[in-house]
Structures are given as C-alpha cells and as structure tokens.
Image (cartoon, rainbow, N blue to C red; front, side):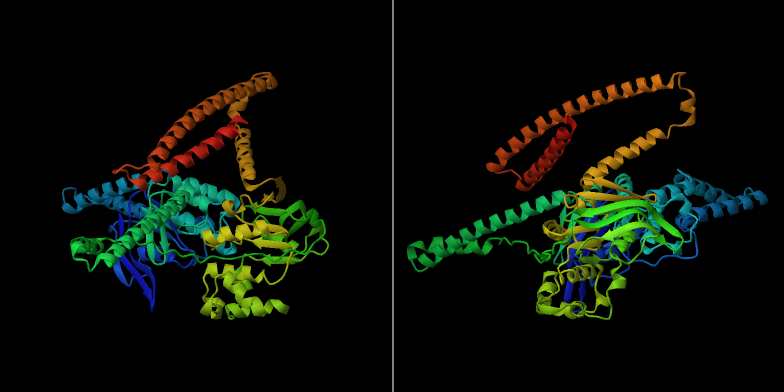
Length: 637
C-alpha cells in the first residue's frame, strides 16, 4: 500500500534517518518504536507530506485515505463537542447535498433521452452506491458512541470545545479521525491524554480496525494488544520485526546474541588463517595453500554487529528523611473550583512508605487532589492534614507552564540548587541524558520528552519523603520509563502518582484511589487487581440494567425465580470452568511437547535448519505457554 524507499533525512551535518526502506501493507498494525528523538514522528510526517526527505521517496496510491493524529495540534473553536465531531462526516454530507441537487434537477427536466439526463442518472446511482457504503450506522449515533468510548459524558456534548483542556480537544480530533475510517491510521502517542478505561476502549477499536495502522506509543501493553509488527528506529537505521513489542524485545536480544556469536566465530577463523599465512608466507612448499587462504579471506563477507544506542537514564532518588506514620489524611472532603464541585465526601489516607496511584477519568479530580496535597488548593469543606515532617517533591503535568522557556537546561537547575549539590549539577543532568552542549539548550527548544526529563531532574536536588508525580511518563520512551519505574521501586519514601500507564503502575503501586462520578473509592492491591475488579463491576452493572419487558415476564414468586436463575447460572459457570481448565491442560501438554522438541533441534541444528525462524517459534511457544499456565493457575484457584 505505502512504500518508504531509501529515505534519508539530514539537518546540517546531522543525519536523523539514513537510507531507510520499509513497506506498509493492508491490515498491517505497526508499532514504531525507538528513543525520543530517533525520528519516529518524522516518519509519520513524511508519509503525510508534512515534511520532505533529503533524498528518497514515498509511494502511495492516489486514492489512499490517511488519518493522522500528531502529538501537538491546533484545535478548532466556536463549535460544540458534537458539532465539531460531526465535521468528520463532511464528505458524506457533501455527497448527500449533491444527490439532493440531482434529484431536484431530475424532477424538473423533461429531456429524458438526452446525454445530460443520462449522465445525471449515472451520477445519482454512483452517489447512492457510495452513500450505501457509508450508511452502516447513523453518523450521529457513530459520533456519540465514539465520544462516549473516549471518555466524554453525554451531557458534555453540547459544551463549546474551547471550554475543554488540550487533552480533551485531542480526544475530539481522535474521534474525528476514527469516524472518517481512513485506509491508514497514523497515530503519534494517542494514549498520552487518555485515562485507563478510554485506552481499553481505543485498544478494542484498533484491534477490530480493518485498515492499516502505524502507531507510536510508549505504552508497552497498548503496543502488545494492538500491533502485529514492530519497526525499530535506532541511530538512523530501521529494524523490522513481524511480531508485537514484547516478542520483538526477545527476538532483538536473540538477533544481537547470534550476531555476536557468529562474529566471534568468524574472528577466530580469520585469526587462524592470518597466523597460517604469516607463518608459511615464505615457504615454497606451502605457497599454494597460502595463496588459497589469502583469496579465501578476500572473498569472505565480514560479519558486523549492529551498533546499539545504549544511552539511558541513570536515576537514583536521594534517601528520604523520615516522616510521620501518616503522610496525608483527609476526611469528608469536598473539593472543587469556584462553584464547581469536583469530588465530595472523600476519605483518603496515605501512610509512610505506601506507593499510591490515583486513577480515573480525566476531569474527575486526580490533579485537583494533588493540588490539595501540595498546598495549592483548599477543600470547600471537610478535614485534612499533612503529616509530621513531610517534604513534598512535586512533578506537575503541565511542564509547559512550570519551566521557564527562556532559561537554559543548566539554568533551570542552578536557579533552585543550594549547598553542595550545586557542584553536582552537571552529573545530575548527565544522568538525565543532558550532556555536552545539551545543557546550554533553551527550554523553549526542548522536545516533550526532554522537558519531562528536565522536570524529573529537578526532583533530585532535594531529599523529599513524598514524591507527588502527575503523569510523569508522558513523552518518555519505553527504556526511560522502565528505568524511572525501577528507581521509584527502590525509593524509600512515599509515592503518590497519577498515571494512565498500566505497565508503569503494574508492580509499582500497592494501593489505588479511583476518582469516579464525584466520589473517591479506595482499592487495596495493584493495578491488575483493580482492573480485574472494575471489569467484574462493569458486567454486574450491565446485568442490573435489565429491560422492563423481561421484568414483566417474571413469575409470581420473584424470589424463588431469582434463586433458580442464580443456581442455573452457577451450574453453567461451573461447567464452563471445567471445560476451560480441560482445554488449557490439553493445550499446555501440546506446547510443552513442541517446546521440548524445538529445544532438542536448537541444541543440535541440522544443515537446512533456519535458526532465526526456529528461535522465533520457540519464543512464541514459550509466551503462549506462560499465558496458558497463568490462566490455568487462576482458573484452578
């Protein structure tokens, strides 16, 4: 469908992309991965003709419809949410208007045998055929369903778009792109402003999407759940893997290890041949063998190991001073702005050493509560107190407003550093990948990922015992997020974090407060426990929404009828569970047998064996076995 052919992008003496080529086929779902600044967003802009390459070209069909969601965009104003979303159907409305005009002309004309009349009939049929393809569902119904899926409430559809934040306006743009149903979707970090439930809705939508997708995301689970192919950009080159992200990571390790092993074997062979040549170069009896080995070395194709970009964050938070046992306590809090109540009757307690996540739909009060904790906002009513000796390090979501764009990177830290730490500013910036001339860059020219790193570096200047982090991983690449997560796991203070990144929260937090419909609910356990419970609750809510007709058909003894119904449900569930366990056990046995056979072949490969294909199959089987074992263990409990 779309061919990227020998593309090079250079800026001055710096080459960002170097002679890269790959193909986007129909139904490809590609995860474009690499470090911040590797050139991922540039590739999307090249495909959309927003940017031109230094050399090479991109071929795409003239009728190929592309939907592009950039990271940063201009938002429309002057319309309501639903009206702006309905502009996605402007092409349909144009066709309907043309059809209406043709019908009017046909009603007035009497030249039934003329060419012009015949042409109108042909065009009318074409328009009807096109509209029939689009009219699977009412445009208004489709728009409302998409907006609801992306987290809007129905009562918000009539609000002007300018009354919403940039993140919510991004959702409107995403809704418009999805509703246009293009042939190719190019999405640059679409989950940055979505809450967890909206991400799950978007996942389901993209999994069922019939067109091609090229997706940039730093959410590992989102990539795994949506994509079937991973294209990595590293040091100007690309590496194409026909697998989702987690399998790509495994295959990439295998590829590098195989390259290193092959390289070392070849180097040993070259070394031995060179020793032979040097030893017998001047012996007439060995001259034929020497010449033969010289020619063999000249013909050999030298193995090279792919260059790797090993630059990464190196974060370790300073030891946390001891605080009181209770870090924050709030009782019956009503919180909001002006006349608007964001949440009410909230009881929230954070103990020393806890790692707590705040989750929920955007606008439900997570950032608002952060401002209460950090002293930026007073509740309308209720009681709250910060614990003894609590020192707060706050990472705000809106780094655009917090960082002074006129400062350099170094100035940003130097302005707030005191004492001996001033001598270590260059080391701290180096740990956050600001090296050499980077420290003299103005904040105004930094990318989103660089600003996030700089804001995080500020937290290293003082020993805090409560880190309050509001969306800290937005714009961070996957490797940086992993390193930040490990540093927070080792952090010995208290953590309060707002995040929609399930993979980042998984294994990091041990308590969750959900902000939903003006209330705050405590959930003990990790993010996966919370998600599992929320899915169950959602199903129960659906079961409670029984149509009125079914209620009228109940027997005269509704209690007995309900008991019988529950017994039937339990029996059915037990039967399904037994069948599921049996199927899993059968599949586990098959997988173990195949893995055992593959291990034997890999330990002693034959002459015609494809090691890479066998390795990929081995990794796939192991992943499938792990998943089935987890399912079997949870089902058998």
